Image (cartoon, rainbow, N blue to C red):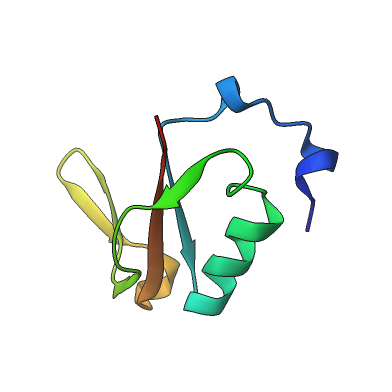
Length: 79
């Protein structure tokens, strides 16, 4: 895993929201810390929830992650 200093991410290069999808809540939270999102002013937007994901293109819909439910956590950059 890369750290914030290795990525050289500038705050203006990031979006207003970031969603991390991970197999566990622990891994989602670990990525929040590893990526330094707290330092960049992001706060959790709501509950971390387990859900299924599909990729839609035209009239097709394909399950993502082999159809396995994953946890999604969304952070919003504070104003």
